[in-house]
Every structure is written in structure tokens, then in C-alpha cells.
Image (cartoon, rainbow, N blue to C red; front, side, top):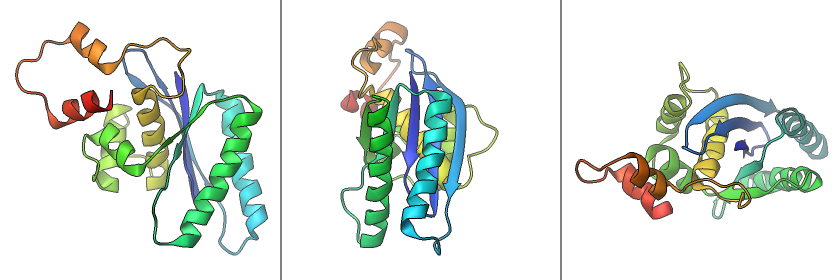
Length: 192
């Protein structure tokens, strides 16, 4: 499954693409950060970001798109920017009939680190490890976009037509627990 993850932001919008096999092995495909200056008029910023996302969608032809779901935030202007970019992404996905999944930052952190309160450096380090990269993607928006894509693929949401075994099935078929489950394994099983 190929997933395009979007970490929406008006100044820096991370867009990352990963491929994940049926056995949950993730492979890096691409990552870019679309930038717009804060002095630019809002409609032009949204156009530039939309064009950047559109180029990556058309280039990589993802099976699904993963977006950050923000459900609470104290900074209203940040929430508005995220909502506006999310609307652009939903529009582009609907034009191409690509399913979109929404994931909270806590879900994404738990998926890639096993800990829902992980900090940005921990997420970046785990994204690098999962994707076999020499270093965490920079800036953090790039790592966050890849983490969103990984989370979506690993959780198996939005692609009911693609047959994949669940984590529990893969674990039963490929591993025999030699002791108690790790916190990450428990989090995965709970998510499944």
C-alpha cells in the first residue's frame, strides 16, 4: 500500500510518501516540505501548498492519504490554517477518488514510537529507524508527514479493498512470544 501523509501547516506543510508491505515493512518513497511566507496573501499560500500536494499525489499515485486530525488547540489561527489545508487536501483526494484517513498526533506517536506522548525528536528517530534512513528527516514537518503515512498504513484504515493481515494475525503467524509483550506491542494489539 502506498500512502501519502500530510502534516498541514501554512508556513511549512510536510508531505511524505511511504510504501508498506502486507507484512508491515515500510519503505521510504519521498518527502517534501512545501513552504510559504507568512507575508503572502492567504489564498496564494493555499494555492501554492495545494499545487505542491497535487504534484506529489500525481507523481506517486497513493492508495490513500493520511491527514493530521486536530481536535483541540488553543491557537485558533493555527487550527484555521490546518483546517484550510486539510480542505485543499480533501478536495484533491476527492477529485482522484483517493480515500483519506484522519489521525490525531497521539495516534501517530503511539503508532511509530509505542508512546502517545513522544516528542518530535523521538518521532523523527523512529521514522528514520522504521524507514532505514541515515538520519531523521528534517525539518520535523517532514518526519511528521512520514509518520502519518506509516501510521495510516499500519492501522490499515481506509483501504478495505486491499487484503492485508492484521498485526495480530502477523504476530500469530510469524512470532512466538518469548515473554511479556512490550508497551509498543500492547499498543499495537489494542489499536488492532
